[in-house]
Length: 491
Image (cartoon, rainbow, N blue to C red; front, top):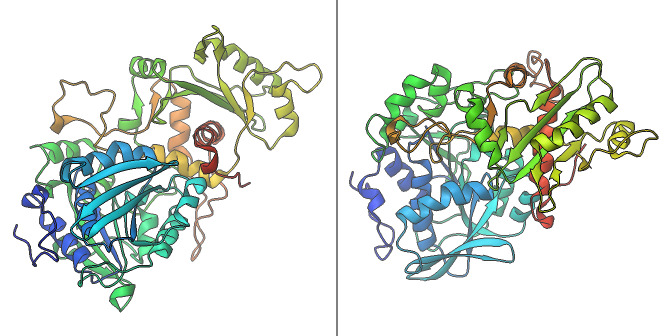
């Protein structure tokens, strides 16, 4: 498709990406380089070229950026940046060290782009949690690209922080004000933030739609794209996905439309993706580099869960790693945890198996029992207090449940053709852990009263296993971050 308008700067490198771009990708390019809105969003299905078009536009925006000014790229996590965003940058940008280079200094990553106007700096930031969000507060950006905005943890705070960082105009004459370009799959909370109430209008797939504002500096422009529109996909890719997943999932993840959520706490949990055979889960678990677990105290029935985490924070819950028994005491759960350490722990150089147990801090006596402080109790090795930040914990789990076509599902071997590969994720549960799987699927927020929003401070249904999972995962994620990035616990 030919460019609908002349390039704003003929000296800027033109890449091969645009030779095969879809009409939707051309529309978001025109909106971003000749801005008619301060916020431009590309909402697309899986494999619709969201990250690819964001990467392409990031280079062109950097080339138009005034020397000495900074821009930003914000992703759901630094892991996502390295696994999904950076590969697209390397794929479509000019060769590294010829037109740009990626550097990491003092813990902060940046990309330096060499342009006809001088060097442009793009700062890399993560929206993973309240700790990493602090890194967004300082800089002033001429523009920002937010990738997979719908899966940002604390998304509303992150979105507002990014908008507040946009303080400088770009160099090119058409670019008269700072720009926020975002890409991602539609999520209902994002629809509400953008002022979309319900599904997208049909025009979103044809010529794009406008939301909010009157003046260009206040407006939001949205383009939607279906998976089938990406000309770089393998033949049959979209058809296979559409035949594999249900209608609601296909509307959101393939058509790029907003789908009203149920009251489920984890609407993004899909057994077809996140539940895997026991043998596969055990193999993945044995390759993990870190073992963690947690109890949930409960009232009459508590729960205990163990899991492995790899360096990319992928969570694997192996067979037999869940346990709950009515009427058990804190001491009995501690006994079970000690019993599990040789089974699920990781063997250190000294031959000792270790598991880090994150225990809920809201029952001091129970915590002291696990620590061996209470008279007559025996300490559980590796016990630490868990972080009890409920909202951040739920968001961390939802973020792990996000699906992607850019990573391989563990059930798909190298012999599976690309067009038949299933979507992958960052958390997998062995199929024999049926109670955990049931609890994740049935956990709901209470119904909202007419005219009111859902009260997310309470959940209805079985919460013992999901709570234990939340304590372990969120505490482990925060503890793995550099000290300056760690989130403060909010009770």
